Length: 357
Image (cartoon, rainbow, N blue to C red; front, side, top):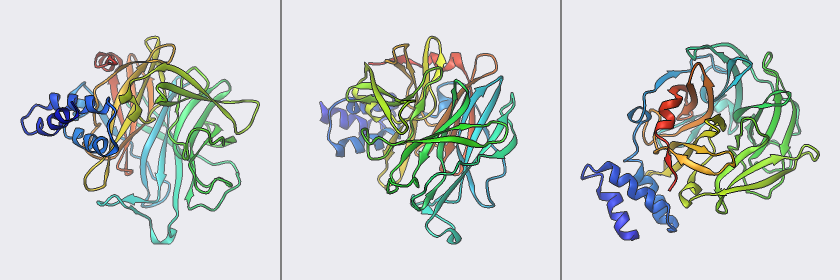
């Protein structure tokens, strides 16, 4: 079967049978295949992936604000609905990615990647205002040349707002990615009560945990050891978290990576995740899909795979929130160089969610 599906995954594109080619790729990725075939299949699938606007109506708007420093990029925004308004954090960094996929850092910064986050309000038309810098609390640093909170997710807590993010220069971790959490003052942008969730039980690097709206903890993996897995920080033991297993999940979900928060939609949770393809050139492409989990956090429905604006490029969604009457906003970055919003109807998103098979 592998050989037939692989042949279909390759040749359907040249026959104009895009839906058949996409389904062949997904079927292959749902089987137990070797690493070489998986990589090839993910790259092949990018040629069948539609833009989001091919699936449902969507309005895009670029987030245009001053970066943290002249020449720095804006990308990978997150968003939350809080106290009747929308708040967003936009990442601003000192590097760019060239055509070969290499990181290019200004000579004055040596080999040091620097990130400063910017907090803004979004109005009803998703236009930004009231830009202020997010200030980090003091913490012991290792000197590793990646500074700042990377790819923040905004989340609500019983006492207000907080962020979770990747940190790489925390002392004692040799540059390994760890999840840091901190409380956020939305008026000033100041972070406080920082914690680094230090236990190494899950992986060498920890990134992209997806906060769950209305519940403590984060979605860690749509499929880990055959199940949906969440993590929850132990409030009584600093630097410790516990791992919780939920419903079983199909093999295809093993390629899903964290994206937006999980937002309460129709008695369950909706989120946006990404999947990674490595092209022949060595460059990566990120593609997305909506997932819907039921009240037990079992993966029940999913959308077709899509790109937001640029097929076969790095696009990265880090925010999802309700806004207005029956509307959803997704925030995403493009090529680590642009920050965007996507304005969608909740009904339209739910319409393209199909039962998990």
